[in-house]
Image (spheres, one colour):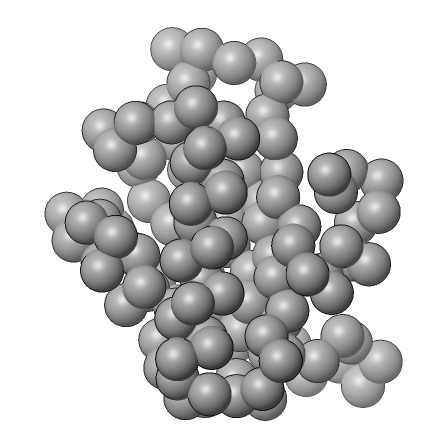
Length: 120
């Protein structure tokens, strides 16, 4: 079993607590489903948000999904002037038998523009 990192991102329509939590839940669920993960496969998740998203911690959404025993951390992305606004990102560290090429990185909503090469 290998340790792999899975990337993901989504864009939120506005800095609204409910929208941040909804988008984060959607992103986490998509990462879990597309990579056929089980709860015990998840080692940790690092969430980041662009500086314009401050209404809620994205990790709360993961805890609401039952990941209270998974180490979760939130951080702010760099404030790059030309960056896509209102973006939530995650990097999940997981145990999996999938080869690196078999990992499904997940980019949703407007964040598809960040990685058109790997977004599905």
